Length: 382
Length: 217
Image (cartoon, rainbow over all chains, first blue to last red):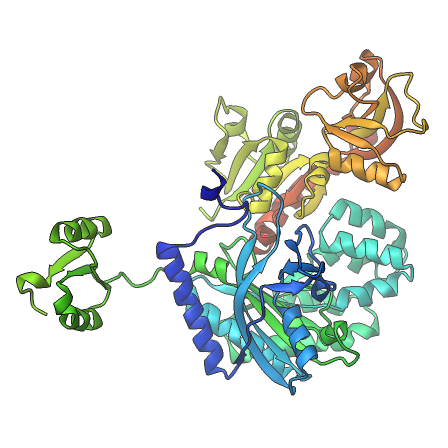
């Protein structure tokens, strides 16, 4: 009986949904090509050690035993395999890579989540300047306006800001971590209890408001200006101001916000972070940022890097409906008429060749497909 | 009307305790009050939709984005490893996780204990912290039966006053974490409906933090 059943958390894709996803992938690939990114494809299977720096959260890995007894995993992420590739091959840097592939993360059983997801992405490795972040933001802006009708908001953050602020409040590492966890997960009752002992600190008012420190840039910068923040965050905030100003000038119709109360997508992020969401999707459409120490998981030398992952499945579910298809046609013909049928197929959109051996079966096929049968055996116009 | 904020409310005791708070916060709950057998309600006057569901399902609705806000006990949030934002302790439904058993139970007996519970994750974490390996039996209904019938050596369960435990000749051996009803918000929903959700949270927080009549006196 099992042969008919899919493993939990997987699905087949077919018909309209598969078509939309393929179209979307084509658009993304064309976009990447137009920008001169080098495609890279890494294997679905990797050694588990590749993903040591990866935080799985509530997900788990699909693990397999390799032929030599080593633990292999279905990749849960596409950034670390690219880092592994660069470290192993010593390809000259800087390089701009792009990828589209499937990732696997085992979610809670029977939760309604799928464990296989398609992700597209960009890895700009060896670029230390802010231009790398700006190129990613440009791709995010252009692709989201190209692919979906809903307005997409790009939210900027920073991977270091929260750690820097908390370190100025307490030197106790365990307390720092407890505050950050409660802040990032917005466990407000717990967070309030944790910060209560810092009432006398000048930063206390900021700590109270911190979980709500996300929204329109102007309002956030005004709040930040009133807080006695440590000087070590000055360059972080200046960079944020610079990026916001650049976005407002370069992509004036792009909605932009700031979130300084959330965790970076992964622990290996080191600088500016960005995510995009629409008003209707249940998750982020894309997320990325700077991770200058990523390669140190594989080699001694660090390399500056910026990357971004795009949730292709969510984009597919939100993608604008494709243009109404031309009426579907099914061409019935004899084998000796193949060239004529092929010519008609080539010039008529939404047409398919009927491989039915008889006219009756071709009629049934056309009926099932909701198509018009064009019968070349009756001398229909070729 | 603007897009509705979907509020999943745990039906039963939580619903009874939270409806007065929502009403004092200015939320029209008349449809929920007169629910008959319906489970989903669109407010006629405010941009809210109420969904009545069992506690564990509230967390599922929230995780999947089928609800924007959930009102549910912290016991369920912890057990179901909720990853959503917990914005407010509503201060009702207060109770406590306890380790309980019969009078003859020896918590220090050198054996691998069998523990009955509705909360295997919380139980596992409790014993892990004590370096004890225990066998956990998941119980769906009256957990008190487990030690009384010999199914388990002890139970981990929540209790409000301890009355049910006492009436079943069970005694408390240890106190675990306290429990109360929380307002939880889907991560994306908070980004998408920031103003509307914080408005509701602030209204409710004002009610929750109102001094009681005893405090006023």
